[in-house]
Image (cartoon, rainbow, N blue to C red; front, side):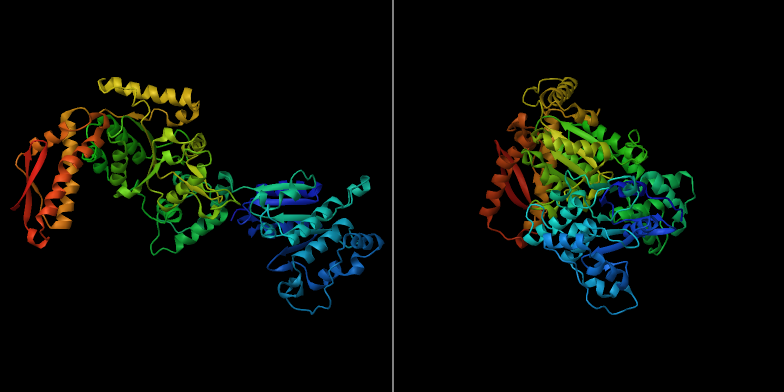
Length: 623
């Protein structure tokens, strides 16, 4: 395994040299390849501080004091060691006394010795005495408080005990001796190191505007760091075919682990060896990230893809341009070139489309049809009605409330949904009704293909398709325009809305040329095609509930034409649905109830549909 010094270690050395307290926050649960093997952050700190000449005393609320034996700890806590007139007066003044260990029994392992008995208040008292009156002991002390984000509760609701402990730390750091000359500057003073998950884990009353504090943020490994690490541990992976250093497949393997920690890399190596048969690198990545070996994008049948327009046309009528745009997006994703212009890592969504047009023309239906075509299920279309997100803080519903707020543990609706179904079509319906703060979230999704929820967890959108729908301009653009004129008018309305009304051209820039205008449905042939398609679920329902084999029309075209005459063309496909409901389903319901027959008596029968004026007349007949 190649060893590469963590990038944060140099910053830690700098802060230790000038501060009295250092906060290490961020990726502190990871391991790092340093000192000849992968080690945890506390292990690295122990060796680094010891190398600088410190006596390292580690502490957490579970293990108590560790990394020192009983004798060393006894030297630290005995009043005689802390003693001296200056120290004693300081202790009396503050009311804190040195912690007396009493008699200890010698044991083989310090981990299970009496030092575990030191609780939070006692240990902070020990720190206080050593910070304000450094003792003449062999080495300066470095107190490492591991899991320090668990020491204090809610920053806004501290208990009296927590406030007293906070005061101990504050006074210890403020009242610690300050170097007065060059000789004293060369002397290493005692220091406190806090290891926590988030920078704001410690109460801000202690850390904000406090010059004695330094902060080092531990980032996840960069791409170069991850590549060096994987080069050193590639033999730990069981892959078929095996990867070779430097070739294209290996580079893709490195890129596919974007935002991984070192632990992720090692855990994925373990996963590769837990399989009955070795997996390819791509399938291993999918299994680790999404719990599935096979990506629907990789398994998409070429012949099926070439004929996808025919499949989509079965559900969406009269919208050739949008369907061709969806087909083009699918082909680009299948070829592996989706988002390549942004980054070779291809972390952006597989496709981004902005459907705009009149109501009821098939925008939502096309999104559902795409989800069914790609993933085999309409439920793979995750729909968010943006009219429900029109308040300033409604973005918290999407990504979750920040720490400290009600519902923080639940996460966000969007981030939870994409975690559960990473392979999906995400539909943001009526986007123009969302509050402006929501748009900021979309900028991050479209640019980076990821979003961080309120819990600090990052979710990826790289396997999804993002679709926005909008009715912008529909009330001003008439149905009498040609298809080309209508398309230009809708695109112009969208540009005007984002550039002039919202003044957010940056979002429009992320969408690019993917604004897809839909036609008005005014052609009677298209209306009849839509109406005919809507009879299919009616027939299925009759079969399931009443055992009726189907509908038989004396003249189907006459029935459909009569229904379409009752349609409000301004409402598009929804107008057809309304007409079917009023002039077909209503009388059919009356007929079934008045017939008073059970499902057994209707076996092998069908309903004959006879057109009478604007309504339909029904009769039972043998199939």
